[in-house]
Image: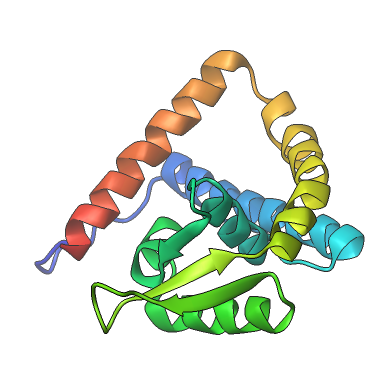
Length: 157
């Protein structure tokens, strides 16, 4: 955060960009989560965890790495994994090399749910975002959020 007594207030254009982002991203996340919940009984946040686990050949990740990948706190990821574990979608396992390390592992049931839910999610992402953007806007959006993510992650270090 910037220091000093001088507040750099947002211009009308900057405020419009900020508010449009806040409302649009909240509506998009809500809609995608609602669609997944209605069709498959899973939230968008839970879906994202299953996706991240499925992207690894052994279908598992350290809990700390998973929390970082989905931008959640360790306590939030632990709570989510507990709920997913109760549904039989993931399981935890201890790390043999590091007594403090814990892995989250995608179960077969979790993999099957993900296979059923993925088309719903992709259709929603297309309908509510991707297909509304021109190809150059998609690239610009990716660049903007890559820069924001990089900035915020560098401040965490």
